[in-house]
Image (spheres, rainbow, N blue to C red):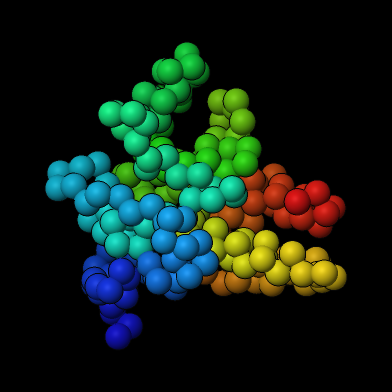
Length: 199
């Protein structure tokens, strides 16, 4: 069973090395059916097979913390490539990131995927620079689900905020420490807001 991932009632081999503790069932349990966006799996698309399979079988959550850009606006899909999105606002797009795929938005950052490395990067509000945020799409989804659990526990009458943040850090670091490596990362910024009870 270790060589298989269960998702959306299906399993697939970890040939590319991508693994995930999160399934489609886990996402719908946390976000509901309407809170999970599945991407169409396209042959010959820009994504490697494992990433495309993950997005098509597990999907991305979409809620107030993370808004997926997989939706349809009118009769046309929103631009998925970063350069096309930035061109709408005449925003500078670093040359190396022009072909990155737009995944969605955190409260103050745009989330993108580099198809060549499978890594996830964020562009903070109106910034030209980007930060490495996650090693791959599975790590992004794991981090989002752990933060959702933190948010749910935060709603309790007297939450142990320090304990919740510590539990989040431990769960994230055990799977992919990338989101918390940089003290100035978007995830550390959001955790500071939680600790200051601004969330």
